[in-house]
Amino acid sequence: MYYSIQHHTKFQYSEPVSETIMEVRLCPRTEWTQHCMSFEIEVTPRVRVFEYRDHLGNTVHHFNVPNRHSDLAITTNSLVEVQPFLTWPDSVAPSAWEEIDQIVARDDYWEMLMPSHYAQPSPRLVELAAKLHVVRRDDPMTVLRQINTGIYESFQYLPLSTRVDSPIDDALRNGKGVCQDFAHIMITLVRQLRIPCRYVSGYVAPKEFGGEGQARARAGEASHAWVEAMLPGLGWVGFDPTNNRTVGDRHIRCAVGRDYFDVPPTKGLFRGAAAEEMTVHVNVQPVDGPQKPDAAFPYAVKEAGGNGGTPAGRPAQASRAPMQVFDTIRQQQQQQQQQ
Image 1 (cartoon, rainbow, N blue to C red):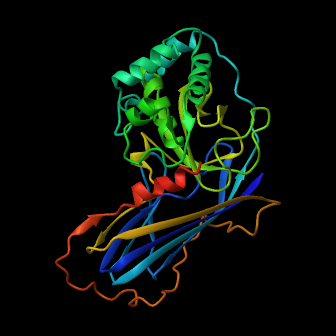
Image 2: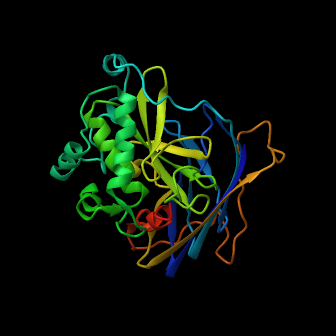
Image 3: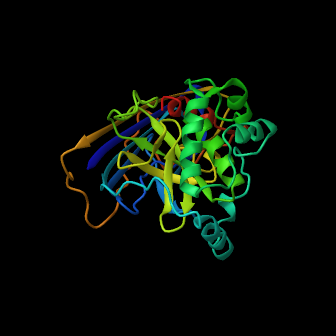
């Protein structure tokens, strides 16, 4: 199956800012059954976009706008092929618990086992763990499936019910949250079992989740988040607690990390005292086949023309205004909360 993805983000400032530094993590990963056939990023005002690969294999695009500007637009277009794969088994051998311990002792998974920025244990989490009987029993796959279902049944999906910087206790206390909260809760529970577990950001392709009622995540209209757990003989197995599903060929992966703090879709700084407002539009659609992907490069980077700002390359004006942390992480959650 081929998917065309357009992700448009626009920032508008209450008054011109003199400089912006931005990172973007929206390029779909190429691995396993997923292949990013083409990727384009367009930025207005005109800038030169650079990229690097982080230690977890995520592609990060970054740029600097060193001129006065009143708005900033980022548009990415991706073409992704996701091949069907076998359904994950309902269970594995009970001996898999010992095999997990051997894998952890042999390989480097400590980042995905330790508490992280948003995946922190708490007394309320201990209560949930007791309610869901989160202990080493039966076999790892059975327990993971039950945790996935337990989170789905224990919490109401409600957009804007939490903030991007909310600790998991907010969702645990109120019994409601969004995909980011459910992913962080599951990650924290799974790590308590000494199973490596990580956060995944990406998209869900449009289609009803048959057999399980209306999906709580509106596929194709925003980005999404789920988790992956390491299991012997299977590798990283994806679980979507927002929709009570294991991950399949309609989940499109962009970035992985310890939690959302590692992989926000956009993250940056600006110089100035302006207030900023962000709007996001996402469209994910199946397409019939590849649309002339560039065979020589896995993606392309475009430098978009300016829209009235000062020309690219002009030295930034001297300013005493401090660099301020963009509120993009907080506002980006509004986009994620659609999923």
